[in-house]
Image (cartoon, rainbow, N blue to C red; front, side):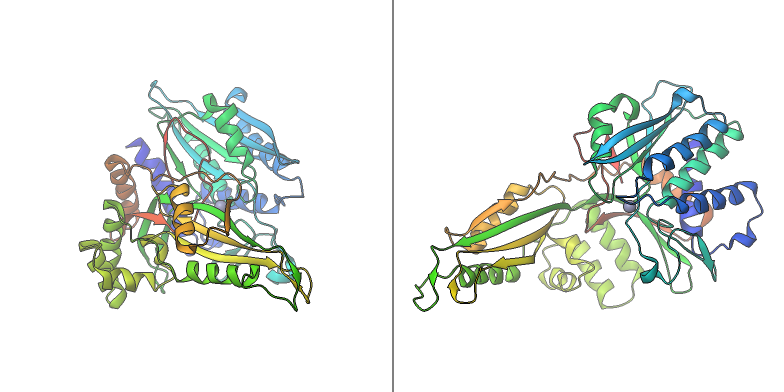
Length: 425
Ligand SMILES: [Zn+2]
């Protein structure tokens, strides 16, 4: 029940984002959380501004002033590809030696220009019950709700059954070196039985802002970029041979564009579509229900695949995103290259996708290179006990709201390294 209480707070704050005006706050903890969010937004923790370390130190001070022992509040300076960054790790000690529960969020934000926003993105503002500011949702909401919840629970004398750990990372939106460093160099500080990433999973509201569903994200796609290149000896454009690097690559691009990867499903994705289908009284909902019943139903999977919102939840997708080639208007192109961005279905290997692309292109002269070092993103186990606790906590606030396991058709700041524990995002 103690864990239920904690998660209930998280859920409450998620849902409340669009409903509660700060002038309605009466509880000291609501007022504090609002001030904390306001002060957090003011840190320009974007790459290049070097504000992540001061932000981490500011948050650390909040924990220490609230009575957390200094040794349990660790600001860990870390390099993020040349930029000074940091992680903040806080341990809330429990009474048993059971493996801890970890909560993850990130302190950095994507840069934002005042000219695009029409207001200062680094000043929290409020308009008609909505908050505006860089990080209000992603992810200073996460750092604020975790910090204020830890502080509140401690002040109320709550002692957790097992250790609870906060890990705030510093460069989730860019290089993601800090989470890697946490896992590789400081695993002892964050080792846990289960990890919750506050940056993932989300509640949905209807058009009247009434909460209708809560997604508990357990899986996401693997992100991977490939480059495909064709090359020719070149020469003068007045003497063209049958082969042409640009034309050959264009055929490859068309083939990739037209190819549909095999339909995939799992017990969890079928449960997701079944629950979502029940919420929607239209053709889309019908396709979802039919897919949930029978993933081999071609009409259903085609219908979902034609919707950009859902294609990523039924299959791997690969799309050409960038193109370069040729070097002069009157010269035969010596090379042409396309970047292909793939979002790989959980559990499918990157090498399997590379092999499929080669087969689809069907031209041995076109080379395929995997960019960077993509890490496969296997799905987390949806534990019944976790789903039950999150459902209970959610329904304490909103009895009508169902909690549905969810696959994100994109990647979030998951723990990008081999783990000793199983993250629920
Ligand atoms: Zn985020």
